[in-house]
Length: 223
Image (cartoon, rainbow, N blue to C red; front, side, top):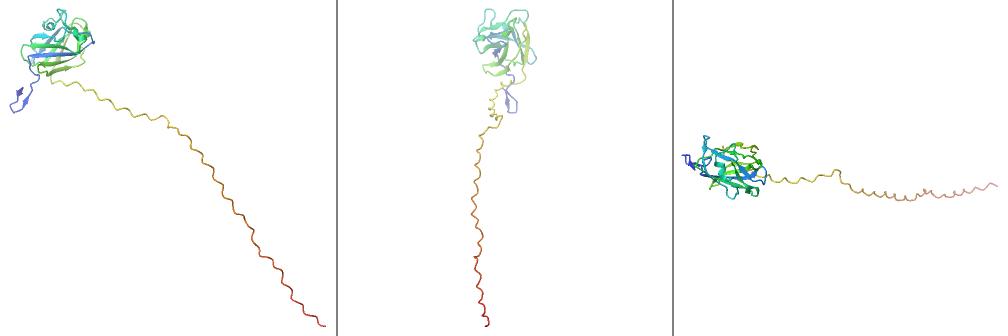
C-alpha cells in the first residue's frame, strides 16, 4: 500500500510480492498433463527477476522433470522441462515460485517443451502469495506447437475477471399457425315462415231491390 500525500491511499500495481503462483486450469489438449521448459519474470526495465525456488503442490513428476526445471536456464536444445502428470486428471496444476526480492512483475515469458505440445498451458491465473491477488489472467492462449518456443505476456493494468455467462434467452413466443384455424360451418338458417293467409274477400253488399211503387189509381171515365 502507498500514500499519495493528499490523504488518499492507493494500491501499487502490479503488487510486489516475494512469492507468486501460477494456477494452470487448461491445456491445449485435455487429460495429457502439463509441461513447460522455462519461466522468466521481468521488472519495469525488462530486467530478469531471479527465481529462487519452485514447487508443484499436489502435482506428480517423473525424476528429472520436477518444477525446478523451469529455473535451470536451459531453454534451447535441451530436453529439460517441468511435467505435471497429475494435470491429466486434475482441474488445476499449481506452480509456486519464490522470487529473490519483492519486485513488481511487469511481464513474463513461458517456453514450450521439446515435444508433446498438447501439454502446453492454455488458460491460467498468476497470483501473489499468500494474499492471492490476481496479477494476470489468461484464457484460450495458444502457445506455439514447436520446441522451445518463447511467448511473452505483458501486464499493464489489473486484469478483468472472466466474462460471466449470458443469461438464457427467454423462450420464443409460439409460432402462429400457418393457416387460420378452421371452424365448422354455421348452420343454415331455416327458411322464412309463410305469410299468414289473407282474410276472405267479401263481395260488396248491394242495397236490396225494392219493388216499384204501385201505380196511382186511374180516374173513372165519364159516362
